[in-house]
Amino acid sequence: NHRIRLAARPHGEPTAPDYQHDMVDVPSPAEGQVLLRTRFLSLDPYVRGRMSDAESYAAPMEIGDVIVGATVSEVVESAADGFSAGDTVLSYGGWQEYSVEAAEGLRRLDPEGAPVTTALGVLGMPGFTAYAGLLAIGRPQPGETVAVAAATGPVGSAVGQIARVLGARAVGIAGGERKVERMRELGFDAALDHRTPDFGAHLADAAPDGIDVYFENVGGAVWDAVLPHLNEFARVPVCGLAASYNATALPEGPDRSGELMGAVLRKSLTLRGFIQREFAPTMFEDFLRDMTGWVASGQVRYLEDIHEGLDSAPDAFLGMLRGANLGKTIVQVS
Ligand code: NDP
Image 1 (cartoon, helix red, strand yellow):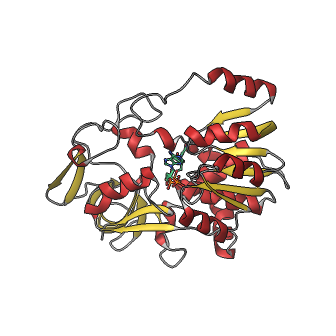
Image 2 (cartoon, helix red, strand yellow):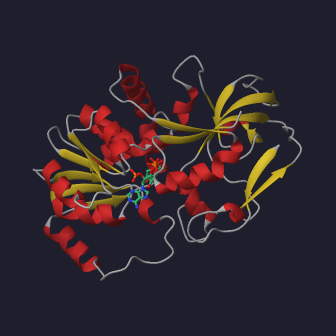
Image 3 (cartoon, helix red, strand yellow):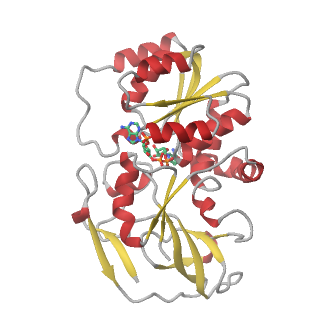
């Protein structure tokens, strides 16, 4: 069993010495467990947070732990009622070829239905994050303007397309011309490259009536550019701050927290952070029903960036944090 474990806590970007590859015997399932072979491994931004021991909403990994991650896996051997060899499941096997997991935590996938990789993206946790954050916090009304960054990623691309299903105008922001083209193909009403020097001017043109909902995925310079365009009573679901996950120091420049709080006050803004699991008990079933329908009808489309082999995981993970990915980052392990 080839595994990739956390060797050291990264300082800044995770690099090769932060990982340790090893080879151990394939484990055996105890009563109530199944042995799984990983087919697809999901690479997600939150894993960078769990490599650090800074305070967060989830406990950090320990040094020596297999790097965590959601997986689509095949049951190889079952010691649990309800699962048998050959079943495909959504599991949490992490960065390794085989895992043993308790049957209770597994969700069975139908290989005859949507492609199984969608359980890691548009029909899984990232898609649910988009749905819950937008519907519960953003609450866009028909005709309103919704802006979102990291807009070709699994969360942002779903946010923009759901906004359009709800009758809102979608302004997508992403890095690079290639991503701008993809946003247009996905049906965004406006598609902007945050790396161009005149991004701020383009944003003003793209949102002539201001922004009613800004779904925050990145923070940093994009947030600074968006803030002046927020309308009175705008809602900001604060979902992620990908621009700073590898930061080792505060950004240069004056303290702007006073300006931010002034804008919150003057414009009656709602900034509301959330972790998707808060909404799972009340919204996950509705999400699966709605999103499965939208994907089937073509109203919501998805992009995937699939890498070959477990060895590709460290580079693919770093690439995703830097914005090299085009769509949901996945490793095909077997
Ligand atoms: P993505 O696949 O979109 O990957 C992250 C993206 O962040 C990159 O592709 C890049 O896109 C963008 N990015 C990185 N650095 C910068 C920067 N300096 N400025 C602007 N953009 C940058 O990830 P996901 O769709 O999986 O996740 C999107 C966000 O949602 C993340 O912040 C993640 O942590 C968060 N999240 C939060 C959850 C919650 O429960 N709150 C659950 C799941 C995800 P580009 O090239 O377009 O700039």
